[in-house]
Amino acid sequence: PNEASPGQAKKEKDIAVYKDLVSATVVKDAATGVTTEKTKAQLKAERKAAFEAENAARLATQKGEGKAGTEKSKAELKAERRALQEAQRAAKAQATGDKASKPSEQAPAAGEPAGNTGTPRPPGAKKEDTGKPEQHIPLQDAPAKKAPRKPASEGRQHEVLRLFSHLHQIPETVDHLKPYGLSGSCIHPAVFRTGLQIAEGVVVGSNARCIAMLSAFRSLVEDYTCDASKRVSQDLREQLDNSIEFLNKCRPLSMSMQNAATFLKARISAIQDSEPADKVKEDVTDFITRFVHEEICLAKKQITSEAQQKILDEDVILTYCCSSLVKGVLKLAHESGKKFRVIVVDSRPQYRGREMLNYLSDLGISCTYVLITAVSYIMDEVTRVVLGASTLLANGYVMGHIGTSQIALVAKSRNVPVLVCCETYKFSERVITDSFALNELGPTSQLVSSLPPNIKSDGVKDLPSLSFLNLMYDVTAPQFVSVVITEKGILPCTSVPVVLRMRNTSSQ
Image 1 (cartoon, rainbow, N blue to C red):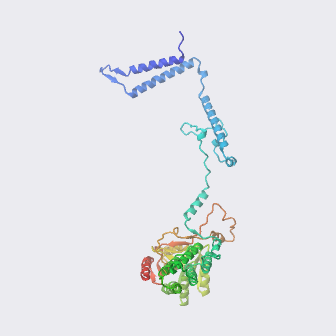
Image 2 (tube, helix red, strand yellow; image 1 turned 90 degrees about the vertical axis):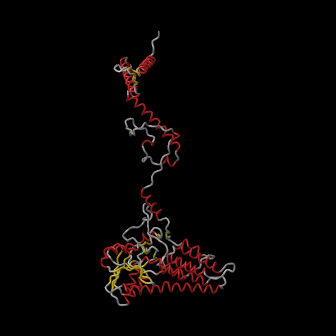
Image 3 (cartoon, rainbow, N blue to C red; image 1 turned 120 degrees about the horizontal axis):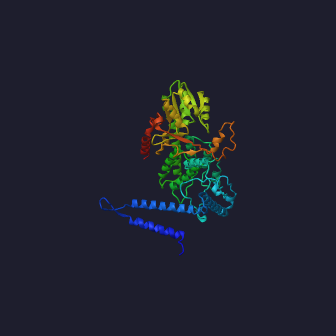
């Protein structure tokens, strides 16, 4: 009979071992005579021991028969697997390169990983051990290469721009306003001229801009011609809205300008349809003239008079930037014979404090000129701080020229009283607690042009990692302001809602 092959003999032997294990699952305890059933863990351990013993015997038999020379060593098997992996990797890289577009073919390969270059890895190079078996992805399912990361500086720049993207950026030129001055435009020439002056920075300051706007509106009303198909109040208000929209494109209206425009619209809305056009024009122009005289001119006179009781002889008064109200207060104090000294604090990029310095010097007032970076040093000499304001908010916060809050903060830390001069027509019902919600971004060219001459500014604006931030206003918390001097008297910052309620009651 033919001898059984080694495979058949092994199979028969395995079957015999398995039968022996199965027959031994139930045994009888010799001491007690009770049949005991083995657990699964015991059976598994016995099967494993038998399998290992059989495997060891088989290996010994193979070695004894001289078959060890035909078995491949562990190193040879590893080399074969590595060669297969490298061949698959090379084929994958070649297929990816054929599908790539031209720009990707011309891109430098220096920053790519070694596995994506298509160059086979040397057999001796070690591969990082991840603890998991390597998985080979088919060529059609291979993931696309990731786009290169953007520099960190570019990301930060975009983050800054997103933070202030809602704010109006004052343009470098006024070319976008020129079409409004062409013939056939609905913008009155006086309004167009005022808008250009505001956009170019010829007219600055909340009071000056408000007076210029109202003067332009007075010219518009004087030249107004009634349309027979429309009501006088409706037609006049439409023209006023177009003019306000144009001025807002030149530069966002300050809070004082918004309040003045609101008062004027309310007066126009109260016009009766039965009134003739000439009578309406006369009433509106009289209202504008009276508003400028009472709310701005007389208010300034009253505020300068109220502030005199806060200025004493031998005072050292610190002021910041240039405010028309502060000018009037210091001028009247000097004319009344009081002896005091003024410290004018200025800041980049507009340097508006120079206008205040020239004005006070021409009056003969002793002045000291410093930049805002030295305010903490100079504050030790100051006895009181007098500041102007763009608007006073309903929560008591003061909005003023950028840097005002820093002046008030340093003064508060040195226990120096801070006096803010502000007309009540600038009071606003809005509530703001930071400088991000409502602000303006000045031209970036101001920051570059105000650099010292020894600093080369050529190409600075073109740097991709550099962004410019030229905020125009900031807000000062009420705890840093001692009092607010208005034409109604010397009030705390928290009195804004009361003043607004009184104004609304009187207007009704």
